[in-house]
Image (cartoon, rainbow, N blue to C red; front, side, top):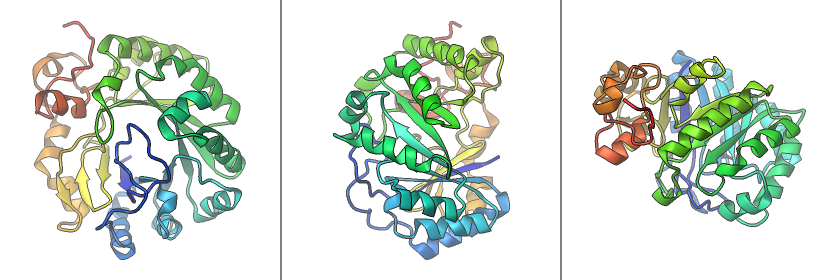
Length: 321
């Protein structure tokens, strides 16, 4: 299934230290209007993708529930990505009524101290209240971005997700875009260790577990638990649309491939040379020579950041050649 992540707004009530979107207190000028957003949803409806409403904080967009209802009416599966702090009981009811199938809550630690260090005082407790308000109304998952600051929290975040009744736990490995800093990146060796740890933990849990921005997990999962795990999805089964309608292979890969204000989404999706190159998978350097190039593919965002070439080698791969 194609996944379309739409950055609905730059507005956010928090100011996280490694925010991909470099979100701010107010919306950006030039964000897609309600009419443009409806037209965008209609344009992707024939593909029947999963639509992720992200931000910023999408709950700060006044028409978010109208747009969610419209997408659901067109047959799309809709998810909402939130920081969790605005999820009152009333908001949870609105989410359920709109037909949103799942809400993802971003946590940066299994304790208030670690989470609040990144997102601000009280944000952990507010997110926990938001999770409680969702329980029994809407399925939710926890998204956990791994950095040097919280890498020790992997087992604890598994415990927290299970205790709170999450349907899924998705791990993200930091890509230094937006406000993300290179000094918060873990090493290639540490990434390898953590991926093995995630796979060991996954084997004993009932949670749906996925790993993003570390496609090497496809190799480790096959060798370890034997469960399937996809590699880099950018431009293949995943695409990102910015708050102003610009299209990218993923939100961490600053490679603009078109604008829905200039072309139909379907035209961009089918004809973009960059997207076609990503699907062809003709990678360079170590990634091109690797036996896992088709199943893993390396992180294309890190390849671009390190080498200037989105088809180049992933610098966070620890596999000996």
